[in-house]
Amino acid sequence: MKNSKITHKITQGMYVLTTKGGGCVVDAVARVGNSGDQALIAVSVAKTNHSHKLLAGNEKFALSVLGEKVSPKIIQIFGFNCSKDCDKISQVKTKEVEDVPVLEDTLGYMVLEKVDAIDTGTHTLYIGKMIEGDLLNDGQPMSYAYYQEHKNDLAKVATEANKTAWVCTVCGYVYYGDEVPEDYKCPLCGLGKEYFKRKEK
Ligand SMILES: Cc1cc2nc3c(=O)[nH]c(=O)nc-3n(C[C@H](O)[C@H](O)[C@H](O)COP(=O)(O)O)c2cc1C
Image (cartoon, rainbow, N blue to C red; front, side, top):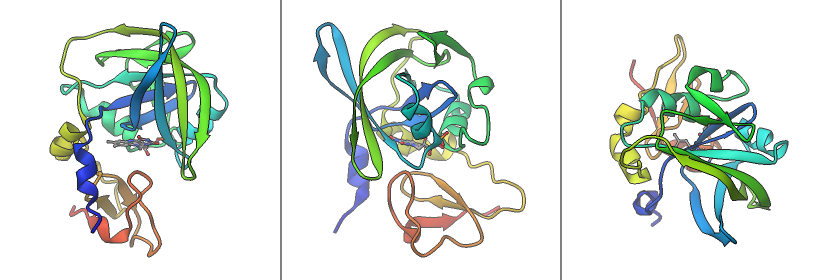
């Protein structure tokens, strides 16, 4: 038995990763140590995300920390859309720090410089050292468990007209199409077709 829901109990947070040109929601983030007085942070980015391509061409990226009261719009823009198809950065309040856009309606941000990139097959684990960072707003950081509990409100699926939406029952990812292909794997949590439920209109 492999019940993926146990992974929701790992205490980790919710962030928006940004780099020049776009970004995406990430939860696979950990502080993995310090290099001198600079924190080392690791983030795992799926190769299927456009942000992966953007990151390959940029030395710096940022993580903005989402609070429990964050506007669901931020999660919808950065977690359920592709930077290839839309300009995500212009849809939210941002400021440039070290040439990297960071989100202002969050608890704060860390700007990181890449120090290593580990290929894990489907993802690249980027390790960055923090070169800038600040607290912006008060609030409780959103944990991944909190997101899972509230995802019906936080990730309200705006179904595109004339398209059938299939929602991953584990992570909330949406697949559009008449049928989920037999060999389809959720780009977020890696689970197969049997985990997707058709969203009623
Ligand atoms: C709750 C949540 C957590 C996510 N965590 C990650 C993650 O840790 N790593 C990752 O690569 N994508 C993660 N994603 C998926 C990306 O945010 C999503 O696929 C996004 O649309 C990619 O945008 P892009 O193509 O512009 O990069 C997560 C999405 C959600 C909603």
